Length: 148
Image (tube, helix red, strand yellow):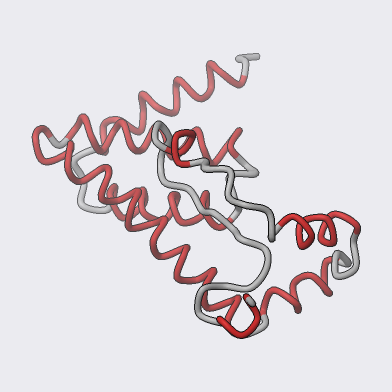
């Protein structure tokens, strides 16, 4: 029985023949959205698929692929960020917290307490990574009343 690593390698090799197809960048955008929406929790599967698709799209399309592959990741992460913003604006976060039973959790209370702490500056950490979502727990920029 092949190991997980061997199966992923076989899948990557078989997926590489479709790198020049028109739907491959669209698939990369979708996987990037999924990875961003899940916050990278499923990096062991979705992250591997994203990395393989990024490489296949980037390498299969010649000089254009060097531009197309990063644009696909950026587009997917941007669409997911817009979805996050819409959920936050419509009180979807509260409904989601209630449904999952995390509305009054100690972790949420701790995150809300630390939101007033000065920023730690995680820009250097993010410089070497693919696009990912950031979530700030607390008042947003669009609501100055709550921020003060």
